[in-house]
Amino acid sequence: MLGAGLGGVHRERRSSPEAVSRRSATSLASCSACSCAVCTVRFLYYAHELQRHAGPGVDVTVYEPGWMPGTDLGRGAPAVLRAIGRGIAHLPRVATPERSGPALASVALDEKWAHLRDGAFVVRDKVTEVRPVAQDRDRERRLWQATAQLLANAHV
Image 1 (cartoon, one colour):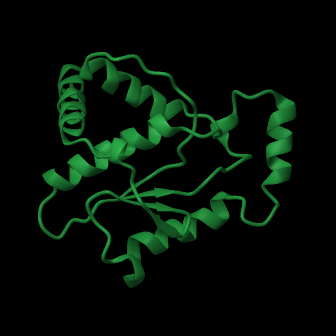
Image 2: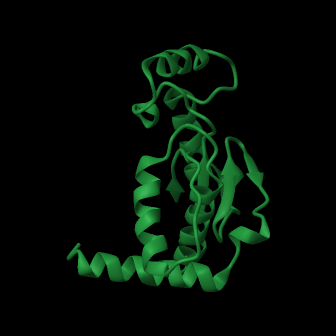
Image 3: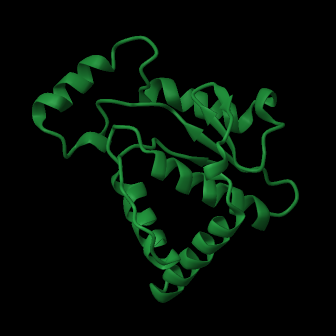
């Protein structure tokens, strides 16, 4: 299972898979609290390819907890925005680690979700249809290969 709070808006020009993968690793670590379609697509690419590489009995699911204000993902935001985020976190249906942790555990462990595989995308508590742009076997394969090359070059 891949789980993350996805966020941040990134523009991307066409470039090599290596450059895309390098930006993916950086983007996944530095996404902000706003919507991030590119980060989500990259997670889905990895999930789909991981499912192809995983053996039988391993099911891959991507979990998106929703916007989660008041966490360290917004640590670079101005103080006033961080304070507003902490206040908003008390509203119902706004994601918090305390609410999202049990939801993620449910997706990983409960029979209700046992049928999910192939990079299924769960947003909060609902399976969400993956758009065609997030299902591109060639890009998934190239991003996987580029990541493997970068990791090999980094001696990780």
